[in-house]
Amino acid sequence: MIYTAISAAKAAGELLRRAFTQPIQVNQNLAHDIKIQTDVDSQKLITSMILEDYPDHKILGEEGDAGNPNGEIEWIVDPIDGTVNFVMGIPHFCISIAARHNVTHEMLLGVIYDPMRDELFTAEAGKPTLLNGKKQSVSKRNEIKEAMLAIGFAKSKDSIEHCLELYQYYGREAKKLRAMGSAALDLAYVAVGRLDAYIEQGVSLWDIAAGDLLVRQAGGKMEITPKAEGKLKIVASSGNLTFPKL
Image: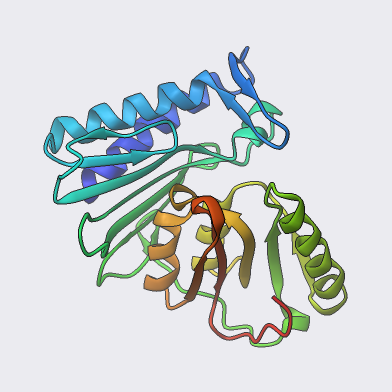
């Protein structure tokens, strides 16, 4: 299945590269988000490639579900993670594809592809995390004062207020803070040691499914807490840091 995931991610990546900085069809412009036709097109391409190889599998995607709802395997797809960056011409976005058992929810594989840098992050259950085929591991830094943290802004008023509190605290304590606009890439960066942690108050499953496995298989730690309306609070880290405030 990993080869199907990689092929689909790279095909979608080529679609995004061609569409980047071209005229964009906006389907819905929300307060803190935007929905574009390229998201839909990317997911259709990924879905068609997965179901061609595995017609009895289920697909859960940001742009809708497909396949057999009772299939043994569930694929979790984010066709563009970092859509606002994409729309604004910021080359920091990716495709995220994961697969898990539909009943046990055991994660089987995770693929995150950054088409603008041609960086392919992959992981399979029981195997190491890879970046373009090379084994990766999380950062060994063990002090907040030396750490690079990413703290994402969720969309609700309460989560934004809490995020600002974290910025005030860790802005004084950490080496540097970042908010780069792609949850999946933040997780990939934790997995390969570029970031020491990623903290987010409210994301969806498709934002983090692939990155979850990447971080764990690279030796890191994932803390996932369900919140209202299907959202998730996450703390992804190397596992070498203690966070006094979350």
